[in-house]
Image (tube, rainbow, N blue to C red; front, side, top):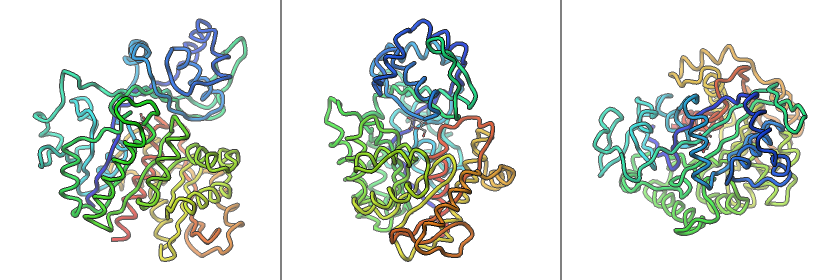
Length: 449
Ligand code: GLC
């Protein structure tokens, strides 16, 4: 399979939160409770950063806040960089590596800042970087690497925390209810949905040879861009996707959502892309934002009620001209499709494959080849809440079909659900949704070919 991947790749610096250190920091910055009452959703000071982290840890939720002040970024580097571990980051970067490691033939990524460090995190198997109309594999990159000058390392700090971690805020001990992560991101290029000119040219010229495209990074856009606003960026990207489709009508297009800093941007990106792309993937937090904007109650979605999730996904598809949505949560993956001729058994098989790859990746922190991953996943237990959710959704279906998982018709859409597999001690929780989405995408392309 030949696959185009755009737009966001960066470097993730993963830090496991040290709760004693956090407690000490919270003693020094005594305005955190006020900041938590009225969260900024972005970072302009160390206190903003601490408030965002503590909200996520208190609630067990995940979030990504963008850093607006380079001094805070410098502080994060000084404080955490040395003890962090670095790996590929950015939804597109992670998904392109998954596709490459799992056996795609050619994976062509758009990279905003292809420095030596960034290049070192790309998979060696099938990733090829376009430059002046030609493709270069990772070992042959030297003359196209960005260095010095304005090219910079795009580092996102990912703070991972575990269930049961405890820290003290204003004299009160807080215990973390669920593992998750808080991402503090400073990334002036991906903030603009950066399109590399070599990628742009190559992808247009060779769209006919491609089987699919995975696109993400819209959530990095901001409302106050200086050089053109977020709508212009989304529209430019839409034009690129339409150009690809003109060259190859059956190019399968998957968009992966992320944690948006603004409801306006989330809503604009979703409604603009929906009529053109084949499907959109997201987690329950992201679905809840879109649901709220579209006058639906986000609470049961955040509570991971599968019926509310299916309902919201179907309403959003219907209202915006999208045919398929894939929602991945910690406990289950759920797909809704408007296509009668989709084979539900094939979708279940692909979802099961994605779940296994992500579970093995969570436990090992590495992507190995597919047989090894599947082997490892065999020993990882299925989520009990995920199994219960499947049974609950099955009961609400208008028609339940016979397949190896749960599938059937709900509100006239074909709905399938598969429980995830839970790694008790994940190396990191970041990028698991991307891993699931990319693995499902690849397996579906293969099974449909
Ligand atoms: C977002 C973050 C990135 C992280 C990715 C994981 O793109 O910016 O740092 O790797 O999400 O899904």
